[in-house]
Length: 366
Image 1 (cartoon, one colour):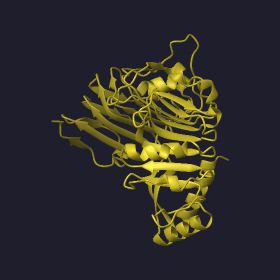
Image 2: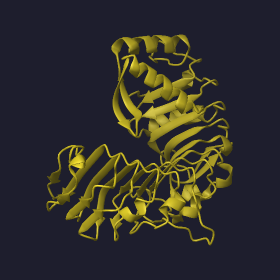
Image 3: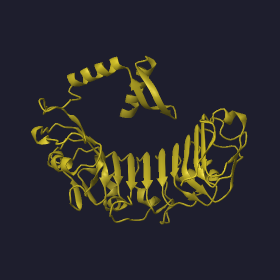
Image 4: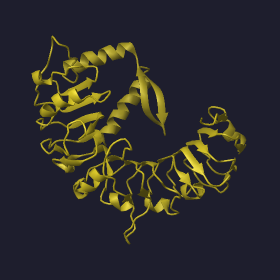
């Protein structure tokens, strides 16, 4: 049983006992929750007792706390007084802050037991004025979150499980054959950062044998492989694409046999994606966000999407959507929104019952 499964079990037990309220669920899994004030106080008290959490102020500091979270409003952040070689987790939330990272860097890079480094509010190496982000001394690192656009040097890459967000250039420079335990990866080429952009395709991820979550935000990406050998990513469960992709491959079910959640953002599709998607037997969520379609009509007529629970259309250029009675027998959530002209809906009554919110037409962008 994985650590996430253990945590989910305890969360569900607290929900059953009305100590925690589920706020948002996806595919039957709790994604966010609200806790009772009494439970919050007990959790903070217990966390302090077992040295899980420490609340910092100018009068009180700790050199034994293993997990530290810093908000960008903490200025200055005087970490030099709290050098803690036992630290397991360091997280920064908020806006970019050069001064903060300048003081944090010399300390965090000496923490050989650090497992979690969460710095998504910062760009690297932009904030430190270097071409290389050197994390080789962090040999226990499991989860690394930031914005990495140059050469990224990782110590024991075998231990790494989470890596986001990294540029296409940074990804190509890594020794991917060492990332044998990587489960979550995000590659993001920002248009606002001066960086080298490298075209990627499916073969760029063929060595990731345990990858479960993949997010690609790239100007150029081929949902195919240039190599003669077919690429199959058997373990992938969740895929997000914001790329210049014009059509989906017909063998989606062969490439991603375990895919449960698919999100497509800003794609200009020249063909109806549904014939390819219906072959994905385990698919539960489909989100088409700001996608444009060359065809004016989309019809889902054949039996398929047997496990699909959520379908979201935020699209442009689609005049008519028709769904027959047989497809999507398990659908529980249907969201539709278009810009400009009204889209004609031809769907069975059982799907109108799960249309949430009621279908509306958005105002065209100015």
